[in-house]
Length: 373
Image 1 (tube, rainbow, N blue to C red):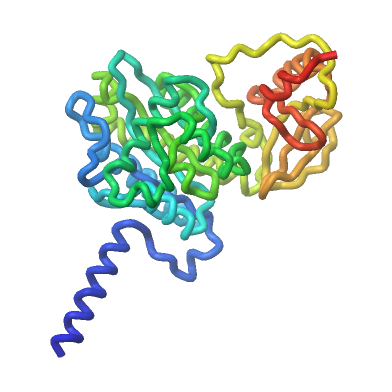
Image 2: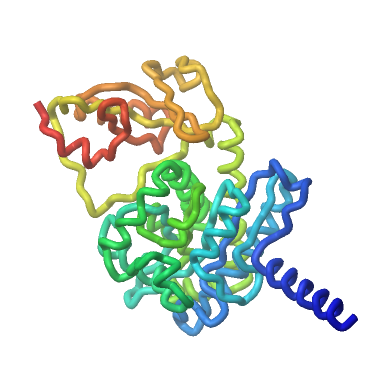
């Protein structure tokens, strides 16, 4: 009898422990759009403590409020990496998302800096555009040193090494466009709706994003070290407004992916790249084809002008679960820049140039390094 009671007690504790990380997966949930919400830090890891505020607490409050808002949509299931003040290893956060077969992974954090820096920025996994991006990623990645067996769990990954961080980037490449799309929506909501300073969509090597196999973003909601912004993020009003903006962006992203192609289907933007001036190229680039990406959707549209605001010369390519739509095609970089302006005048304000070599997409920087004729 005592043995049975002990087994029941242990089973109950295990159930409670698991439920603190994730929601249940009932039969009714299958087929839903799954969003994993990740509150950064937790437990013995407070995150940054700018002006005495605790990043871990603010991130958790925002995440729980976002979840409450988007769960009102009956087609969405929310999974949390933590719902309490507990420490969760970075690799476990990724495991939770992957096990849930999630459609999105959204990690929420607060920033810190020794200067008067302030504003919001949303990161996707990618190469560091500058030293600042690397420092932000290094700060968040250093959490692994608080984990037991981190050397085994991360195969010798060193957050302090740019080379080590660079090695983790390729696994998320197929989800990069979708991640950028969601990140762009989030930043747009912060800027247009809340009038927060927009620090842009950026790329950096966050290991928590590397652990996931789905479109993933990491939101830095603002700087606790900037007194006014820290006070705002620590307030109920600030947390409610930031949560509302993130929830709206997620719902809008789902609307796009569901195939409701309209004005919102064309807001994907290129990643902020202010520190790398684009070279002025005047001639043809041999073996390179430039196009303008204007849309991304799960819906396969006919490439007819009436579907694209009168633009002709439209091509379509499927990448993963998304169809990408491109305007124009040329090896002349100067000409494609002109075509980009045409697309923007037609209403595709966030259209951007992409490059192909031998039918495969390559980075624009790589394309521009090729010898022009």
